[in-house]
Image 1: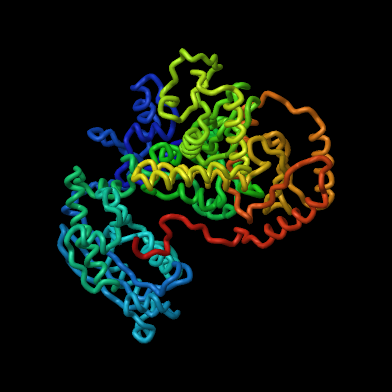
Image 2: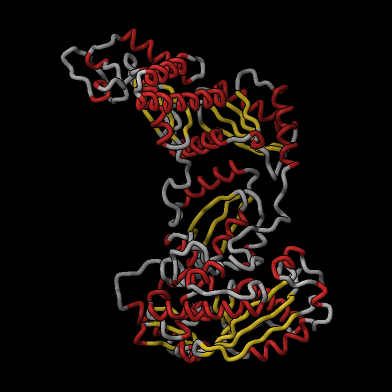
Amino acid sequence: MREALFRYLCERPAGATTAELLDLVFTQPGSDPEFGPRFLRALLAGDPRFFFVGEEDRWVARCWEALREDLDAAEFAVVDIETTGGSAIAGGITEIGAVRLRGGRVEAEFQQLVNPGIPIAPFVTRLTGITDAMLVDQPPIAEVLPRFLEFVGDRILVAHNARFDLAFLNAAMRRHVGWPLAQPHLCTIRLARRLIPGLRRCSLDALAAHFGLFPRDRHRALGDARITADLLCCLMEQARARGVRRLDQLLGLQGQARDGRPFFCSLPRDKVKRLPASPGVYRFYAQDGRLLYVGRSTDVRRRVCSYLYNSRGHPGRVLDLIRHVASVEVEETGSELEAALREAEWIRQYKPPYNRRGKHLPRIAYLKVGGDRTFPRLVVTRRPVSRVGRLFGPFPGWASAERARDALLRLYGVRSCSGRLYPAPRNAPCFAGQVGMCSAPCAARIDAAAYGARVRGLIELLEGRDAWARAELVRRRETASATLQFEAAARAQRDLEVIDDLMRRSRKFRWASGAPECLILHPSRRARAEAYVILGGYLVHRQPLEGEGDLDRLAAWVERALAEPRRCTPAPADIERASIVAAWLDARREEDGVVLPLRRPVELAEWRPALASVARTAADAPHGEGSTPRVSPPPERKDE
């Protein structure tokens, strides 16, 4: 535990408060407010690697003690480099520029062109004006480095997007010196993001414009180093206004997350970047082995890499999770659908503390017709399966389903209220009946036969078998326009668009709406295909298919399942899986596989070519083993 806290403090020149260290050690604060400080004093006070600053309630690693100096006395070396383009491993340095600062004043400057030994990318030449011919007679980086290191000394390094510049400098240092640069560094992009959170872009040009600076010799090393030095002085003034007086505090400021606490992730970057770039489920664990969070992604490597960086998009809950994560495990799945199902199973079984209940499930909704034999009603529901009434959908959200419901209520006048009706002329209709969105069967304004005809017309429309609604809405729109009732015409046009969307959905799903019975064959990275059997709206079976033998055995299983009686009461896990499958059906693209209706007898003659087609799709899809993770911010970028 002491070693873990020492490594943590070694990454933070400003140190960490008692509460921050206790948060790393304990996941629950406890009831005794004096126990935590006593515990840390007993653990760290006798170790010479730590010292405690009582007036700030802060523990600091002894190696940073020299950085507790006033900003006015601090010395900086502002650095900028130009390169051949590409990554730090494959590319080379073409120019180094540096400015030494003390007390906000320039003490000295350094500029040197470098022969990288490789050609410069054409777009870099257009940007910087540096050509291959200009570098032929210049010294190589091995000769330039000693003079640069002598100029910099042990001063704090400063760069705009320091990740980029230091990646190239450290790569050259390792090749020619044997070790990377050792001194701490400041990144003006990171400082600007903490000090000016409202600024949309933090590029050098954007920040220069924000502070009224006038860049000269832009995209040349010394010119950019000069403007970065001016920018650093402006940012230090902003930091002083926030109470930052010492160098260690300024270094600590750039490492803060959006919640004001230092950003820290102990996941090893090398291990994360070796994760598969394919669909799968990732699981985060704490130091003591407890499961903290389960997530899924179509590219697991890219998603997990996003947790390594101090992004402005991380909410407080995610930042707290990142600080407690010690290891990650990944389970590759054959498909995106399988990843969603596996994620739901892990969350339901283990209930990780950082997974919000139900947040991993798709936010879909359905229209439901039923609830009363004589006077059925039309309502919106989230449950993907219903024992009473018929479901139509899914819709990509509650609001989408409500828009469809309201348009249908205006067209057909069916009711949406709950409860059983006892029609009588003395009953006063509700507001929907008064404004014409309901035919008011409660007030006996329509008999059961006429109401039933309206419900049948509604169902025919939802099944895609009735064109009356569209023609009626076109008539209402034209009539309202002719009589200058433009609001009514606009409402009819909006309802017409909703009906067109309903017709599209009915054509897309047809037999797969409501409680589908189908076989899904999904392209897979681990088999020829992934098979999912849906009966009565439930996912009842899933398996990878390797060959024709697996398909024959699956057909026999489906034959038996179709002959067996169906269960009536769904379990919560069944509803979760049904929601996931329904959302997948709604968002399905052509390349996402084949959906086949199930009927007896099973039509293997239809299944075999479908399996062959899905297998070809999976074979043609790019696999992620050799792909490069796209993480933010990428180290290859020079400016934001």
